[in-house]
Length: 127
Image (tube, rainbow, N blue to C red):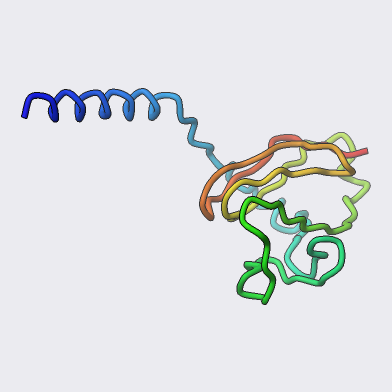
C-alpha cells in the first residue's frame, strides 16, 4: 500500500507542477464599436488546396478524411479594412480542435493546442 501511495503522490506532484505552468488564455471583451467593425471569417474556405469546406465545421462531418498524424490546411483570402491601419488587430478563433498553426500571408503568427477552446492572437497587424 505504501508503494501505491508514493506513486500516487508523485503523480499528483507532477500534475500540480504542470497546472502551475499552464497559461489559461483570456479573451478580450469586445468593445461595442468592434461588433460593427469585425471581419467575420465564417463561410466557405479551401480545404487542403482543392476542396471547398464550410467553416465553422469539422472536416469529418463534411466527408473529408485526413490520415492520422497528417496536417490539414484551411485557406481563405480576406481583406482587412484600410481604416484599421495602425490599429490594434486581433484574430479570435472560437474553437479549433487539436493543434493549429495560424499563418497570415505565409508567416506563422501563432499557434494553439486544445479541444474546441476559444483563443485569440494578440495584435496580428497587417501590411
